[in-house]
Amino acid sequence: MAAVDSTHNSVPSGDATCVFRMPMNDMTAPDLMKAQVISKPVLTIIKGPQTGNTFELEGALTTVGRDPANSIFLNDMTVSRSHAKIKHDASGVSIEDLGSLNGTWVDGAIVSNAPLHDGSSIQIGTFTLIYHESQPERIETGE
Image 1 (cartoon, rainbow, N blue to C red):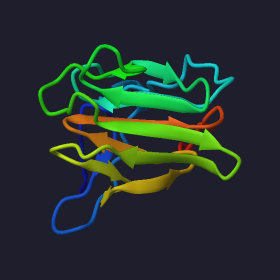
Image 2: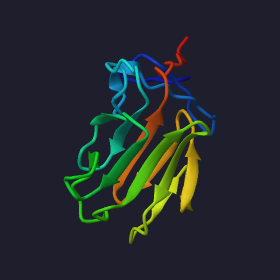
Image 3: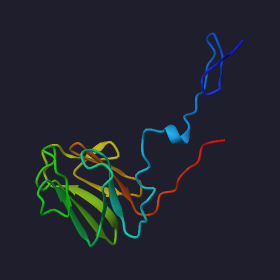
Image 4: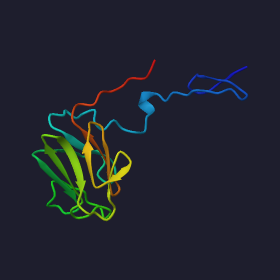
């Protein structure tokens, strides 16, 4: 006989494999982009001291670093004063590390210069940012 848990799901006994689905209202990771309307490319911090902040990338050059004079100011000692720059030109958008101490990572690989695509993950110090060129689509997986 199967036991029933407090959510009224049947829980088999023994060594059976179970699939549990987390209700959407119980998710611990917030949907940080749900309220954003994207008209220009943006970077959104999804991990780090300023989680949830979104920065519009305006113009051909955006600087990133710990110095408040940068276009994107990341206030943490793991970020170099002039850490990276993001360039937008006819060939697309790219990020270039400016000789930072901890490096710049794109989609899990350390880079000196790399193209950015919609959904690219960028790690700078303790910050993880996501690059978006368009409104992200929400994928529904429920029944």
